[in-house]
Amino acid sequence: MHFDLTVIIPTFNEEENIERMIVTVDAICKAHDITEEILVVDDRSNDGTIALVKGLQSSMSNLSLIVRMKNPGLSQSLYEGMLHAQAQLIQCIDCDFSHPPEKIPVFYQYLKNEGFDMVIGSRYIPGGKVIHWPVIRKVLSFGAALLGRLLIPHVKDSGSGFFALNKNILAGTKLTPRGFRMGFEILGKGKWTRVKEIPISFVDRERGASKMKLSIITDYLKQWFHVMYFNLIGRESDNIVRAWRIYLSSIFNFQD
Image (cartoon, rainbow, N blue to C red; front, top):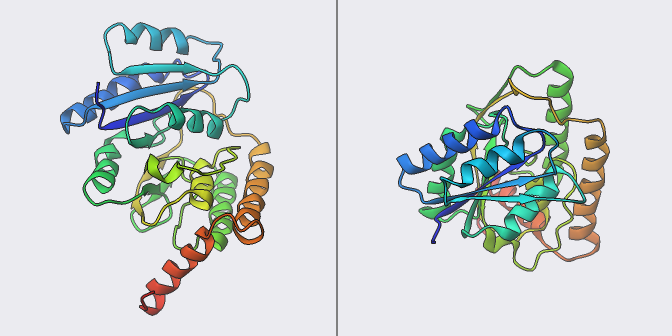
C-alpha cells in the first residue's frame, strides 16, 4: 500500500491517550485526502497501551506497531520509527495532545507542495505559545531554545518535538539520538537546505504522567556539544555554516 505520510507516535504508558490520538490523526488525514501510515513506536509500556494499539489494528490496515525492547528514550523511538516509515514524508507528534494534530495537514502541505525539507511547530515565533506550563519549565525550555540558536540561529524552536521531514535528509547521516530533542539532532546533522517554522500552541498534557526528567538537561548539553563537534571539529557537516548564512542573509538581505 502506498502512503503519502507516515505519522510517528512514540509511546510509553499512554493508555489514557493512545486510542484517541490514533482515531484523531486518522480522521484529520482522511478529511484532507492524505493516505497516512500511523506508526506507534512503544518503549515496552507496562500498562494497556500495546493492547489498545493491537486491538485497533484489526480494523485499521494503516496502523503499525513497533515495541522496542532496549535503549529506551523519546528520540531513540522517533529515530527507529523514521527508519521503518513506509512513506517518504514523516510527521512526528507526541501522544498526549500537547501538540495540535489538526496542524498535520499544514506540515504536509509545506513538505509536499512547497518543497521544504523540514517543518517545525514552533512555540517561539509570532503566534506560537505555551499553555499551562510551570515557570521553571518555561525558563528551561526557552533557555534551551536560546542555546540551540547559537548553532542554528534562524530556527527559533529547534527543540520542538512536533516536526515533519522528508526522509531524504536522513540519508547517509550519523545521528546519535538521545533525550527529547530529535529535531535538533536532525538540524545539526541532516542534509537539509530549506526549513520552515509554523506557530503552534503547546498545551501541557491533561491525561497521564509526564516523561520529563532532570536528565534531559544533561542529555541536551551532551547533544549540543556533539553537534558542534560534528560540524566544526569533525568537519562532517556544514549545517552550522549554512544556518548562519541563512540567518545573516535574512538580516542583511544579501545572497550567496
